[in-house]
Length: 409
Image 1 (cartoon, rainbow, N blue to C red):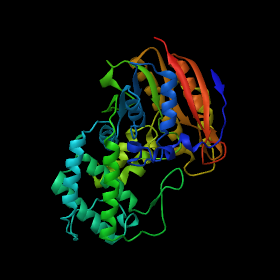
Image 2 (cartoon, helix red, strand yellow):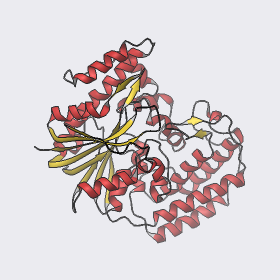
Image 3 (tube, helix red, strand yellow):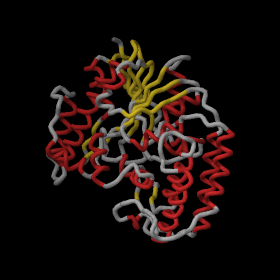
Image 4 (cartoon, rainbow, N blue to C red):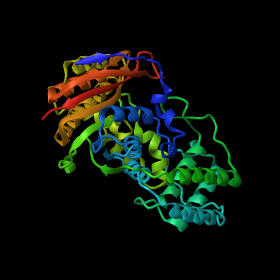
């Protein structure tokens, strides 16, 4: 196993910040999304014409969209229904005439909005922490009119571009702040007027339609799959894997996705959110944390380094130390079975790239890259190398890596 160190600068061009002004990649922000530039570099290095790419943790479909832009075919797995919906919308081609017709429908729709209380609002806990009460009335009125014109979000029809724009609108008018790795709240909500919100929505929608005009030369599809199992796609064969699984750092995807998922009705209540997060690797929202108390490992042969760090975490003087120890243990238990089940989908000599970050609990570092690399070795992956990508903008000592490997049947 080889570890190679590169420049450990922060490299903002290797993060989601690089994506925000890149057409479809910037439609919606999800902080943990990784860089378009990084995916492009890996594809140029590892892929040849005709190769099929797999991303078993689709997220916002960065891998699939980059692959399509570069003329490759890809399959992406995802367990979150909202991300499946968003990813397939981002990765399809649109005809200019359809987009022009949609723009006219949209303009007419916005001319006939009646702002009134009483329209449906999502059942988000403490919703006025997110939006000013007057802003909520306007957003609910706009949503009601969009439903009357375009129907609820569903499938990959080009009408869904309206709902991508609305999703962007709700986050832009919220008190959510993205000035660090996760999401926080500004001190006060902002009161927006109807004209201001309408103008913002028009700008967002126009930018989305403009980037949707660009034709993709490859193709990508996002499929509902639990990446721990992947049983439904055992006939697929892939040449290259490019992915970035959730890091073991208690940053929950579901937390940041909740506003989108509630407003477009992919979530009905908080218990559904917690149940979904429990099924994901590294999920920690709601019931996902309380379930850890009774969780038991299914693999007793994980790398020794994992057991050592889990023991150190569990012995820390903190009421949550035992729970956090189990959280780390469950993360790698899940990752092991993911890597094992994925191996049957790979062609001989397939190249694997896992973008991961280490983490720290109570001052004890969980060296994710080393533990995953050892899991790969146990399963039968070969030529394993760990390349340091960048220094993360968080605690001292936290880095991001690319674990590179091959799989020979």
